[in-house]
Image (tube, rainbow, N blue to C red):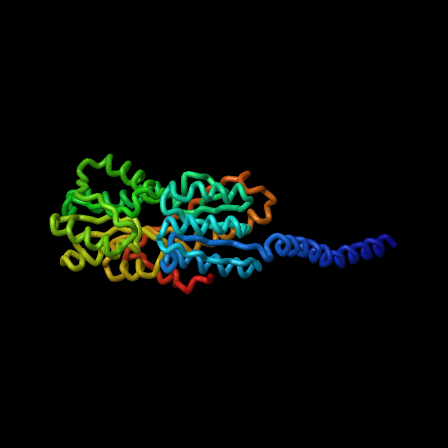
Length: 333
């Protein structure tokens, strides 16, 4: 009789397992639907139409759509005042999340603070402001500058180097990203007194400006060992100037970016010597995942501050892979 009772109890327990599993799954689904469906995310890069910002936008839009959220891109077109105006307008519209890309450390700080005070989650990406909002997601620029400068020293600091002359091409010198790269690079270069920095200029993220300034430097220093640039989209201009001067393969161009297709092409063609990728597609997944967490957390905007740094991968002609760069599709808006 006991055997029969135990058998009956076991059968009932097994029968209940699917019901318990379904109930648990339903709890997750209800939370997901309740907290995310219909929520709005406003993405404000410094400009659309760039491979980097479009990779971020297209990836976040895909994930937002999957969660039933509304995602919109607002393009200031590299106009800082226009970006401030867009953000001011968005505060009145009150999206649930603003994902903002700062041109420098100061310009958006006040308006982002106002957004948080209005009850909007603000996530800053890759280039932060002096105002700490709910989160920052991006590359650690100090680490990036350290890694890049170390690679430059390894190429140009030894006895077999073409020369010990190097040149730097900054982006916008007041951006947190640029300042961090310079901080990391300077700490490395200061330890290697044989490295001679013959030029330190800024191109404001513009390929044409980088090209023209690099062409002048190469005329003055044809024995240059390396150029270190702050962003691959800009640094294509450096590579073009090197090629036009007949110095490709002699002057090494070190750059960085989010894994945009032109950077991989330039690596394969020998126009870039080494690129340090912060993997924009993976960054975007971190950005949108953090947005989803904040929306489900119940934490009030202004009561949370977090930083997420993304890994850096170095690519040369020897180790570049077919998946190193992300195909760019049109950003949803």
